[in-house]
Image (spheres, rainbow, N blue to C red):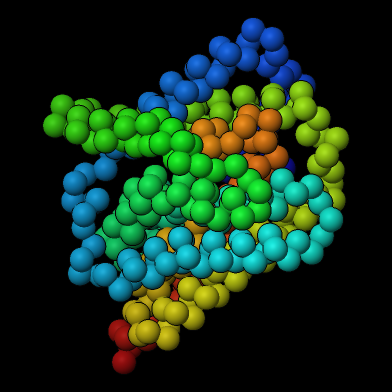
Length: 328
């Protein structure tokens, strides 16, 4: 029962989807049906992302350029460098696709909703978090596929200009169309955020089901045992710890306020499941995706649990600082 209280409902649904695909994978004529449905769902997902983001949220942030610059460096430089070094080191004899999966995880943009939510809970700079997380998500549509072509080809993974063009067509075009539709859809989107959130989650679940169905047919559970799952958990914890420590060190070294430090930690240490799984569906062969997204799925849950603990700790620190200032 404790496990069910720790895991958020969406993560539980993800686990159920993986189990469903493991026991009842899509086969035969259902495969093209789910592929078409998944493509349509992903297009809708990014159309809604574009419709949700205001022009101000996309271009704002000039007043906190140092904070935003570091968050982008943490997301698109620090993480990828760690991923490349780890993939080259390859200390444990596991399926090479897991190393590729961690490398892919490291080049993804940050989350938006959870980064802002944890920043708010901890008492950080919420306005800066909105700008940084939104900018990271937007830049990720451009940078992540380019980094796949640049970085992952070094390790033999597939990535080409053709795939970059494909992801621009399937992700960027719906995003731009969604944003351009804001004068007509903006008010409706604001009123139906809960329904749109369900659409986001449904799109991800469809991709996960399709990917794991293909992976099960190709024998993923014969390749990934408890040892491999433990390996993913340990590496995720170490990777997250390194990035958080570097972010805290940079924030304090360069004199950021405590509120800005909180924003840097929560925006600079997250990786987006919502962007990562649809991108993987476009960038990689279906047979690879199940193994590739395992590190991302596990890292996503670990980052939520760790950041929840950190947010509560930061909140206590902020409250103690305020009490000390009041009594001084």
